[in-house]
Image 1: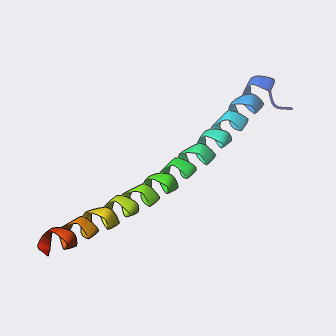
Image 2: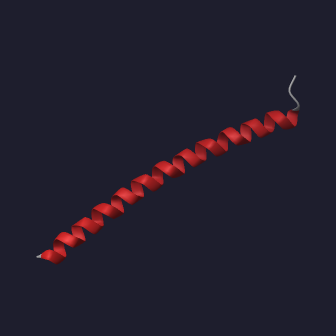
Length: 47
């Protein structure tokens, strides 16, 4: 049987991985939105 500390650590590690994955996805979405706005601004400034 696993030690309680090991079990808790594994659960914490799993949750951390989930959070990191969500942050990466949110960051990617944010970068895409910023890139889109930059391109819109470039087009606006050309006219």
